[in-house]
Image (cartoon, rainbow, N blue to C red; front, side, top):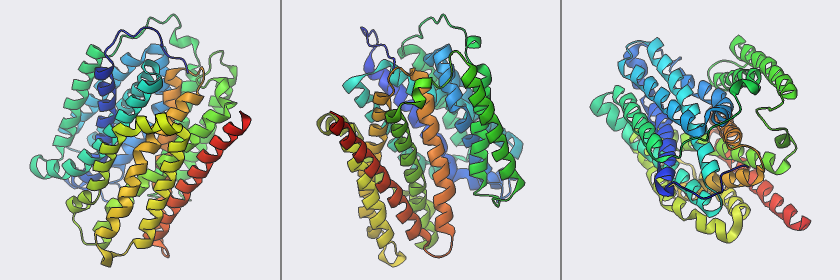
Length: 457
């Protein structure tokens, strides 16, 4: 991966914190509205059947634009793209503050999804471009810490803000946070270099096609949790995704400077790292949902009490993440990654075996703490493995690829795992066992890749 490894003329600490807090803001954006969605729907007249679109209206443009956002970061500059994304995110938040009808609420979420994709991909691009070696490990550890802190803050504060100040205060929080980070980015992040290549000289048709393909795929995946799979919504979105993907492949083949470098397609180490990053989100995103929903449905907990179930795990994530760089230095990214995936698998499997309303909170505590040890380690090491394997891939393209596979891993997990929990038969234990299988499979792949590398040496 290309990066500026010359003499550094910026303060690393403020830059790391600005980028990590952008991640924090995006995690909060997703977490708080998961809890507040029923209140928003009741207030503006969105039916309970359509309530999930408060979330999906953000997820679909966010997932669809991540790869194109990385492309824009390469072409227009990462700092400029990140700043613009934060301003768009703030504009979407303002629409949410003044929304009085379903159309305005959903429009605000779409705008926030666009801004989140631009800001998230550009922030990751800046991290890969500006930091290398041990400093990149520290920056990625801070990212993992802020992701955990965002989950804690989103879970604990969303109910409080909604009860005390109303759900509009959550959108106002995004406005203030996004504008503050945009100002900080302009102040502390190094200016983008002057670029001699114009955007039009790259495969713009490919960028448009891949955005349509990814957005249509995201629509189909999220829609499967709402509509029957035979529904015209699902098949129409799937057909559009296939058609747009074919256009993208053709445009990439003809482009002199494709969005996804041709070397990526033959880089097995990079493809494996991206697959592991996607698998991590496929397992972990629905796992957090199951652990927060189960106490409400089967143990009589309120939403606030269910959020407190996740608090010890979240605090452990925040406390453990800053120390990961030392573990990675000592045991290597692959060793830590293998152990982390295995730890998550053991935690999810143990939780599946102990899950019983009569056992109370303590049955959840031990397994969730095990999972909490694995979460930041998986996040950091999959990112390190991806960056290490990337070679000469540009920072923006790499950030777009990484965040795209992570988002789609999460979307697939949310479509599949909760459906297993809701089905008859095994229910929640079977869903948690499925998560454990995915995590253990990832541990085996990570471990085998490490053995293959040592054998070649």
